[in-house]
Image 1 (cartoon, helix red, strand yellow):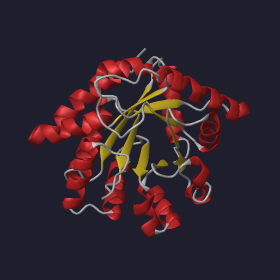
Image 2 (cartoon, one colour; image 1 turned 180 degrees about the horizontal axis):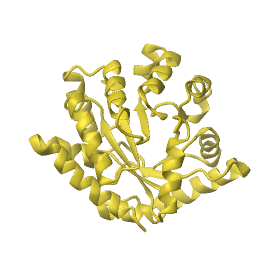
Image 3 (cartoon, rainbow, N blue to C red; image 1 turned 90 degrees about the vertical axis):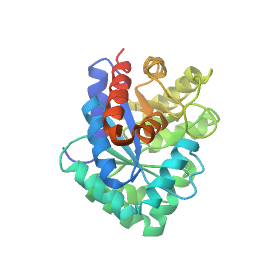
Image 4 (tube, one colour; image 1 turned 120 degrees about the vertical axis):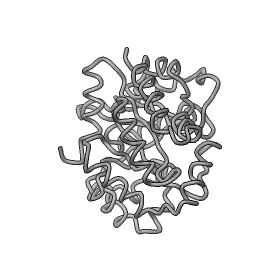
Length: 274
């Protein structure tokens, strides 16, 4: 399958199987790139539908303590953007699992957006999410994203008004990413009370903006920590994104990190069934 469309196909396949898609996040290079390739295989074996690989960054303003530590470990082990692309290429060589490059703008801007996007696509990435580029500013980079053949995925949050949600939906391909609550990434004791309302607002915006271009799936991330959380989100959204819980599992897993992450990921994937 060509790069563009692999993410959408994964969501469509999940819908056909009456489940939400399970999107797993890993910080690339945590604790090193060899481990990233091993963990990617673990989450795929567990049933992940999409893998987000995060580019480690020294100023991760959207990330909580778990992902901040992961980024610090990755940078300390010498992880570079070239290394992230090399790891993605190694993963892509053995799987059709959709790969989403999750990054702050700065690391890619330093390379030159156009060059970075082309290299990401060549490495095997299918989609791109720039965490700190809002919809209103994304038009500066989206032409280069399209030329590279990547699907842009944009974020909306509970504080996004209807106009911003529609702008993000108009520009997103593959899925629209709904941040479950205000604040940074990280595990929470419970889901946000207004999550169902936020998802409904995002879905209305996507439906209104897409018109006859077809449905844009809605995936929810940030703060989903357990299988029970995943089950509740799967009941209202098309995709469930889990990052910090997997990263924390790898962090504490030591030599058995891949096995531990696979076990957790399998429970999360199962919880996405409706």
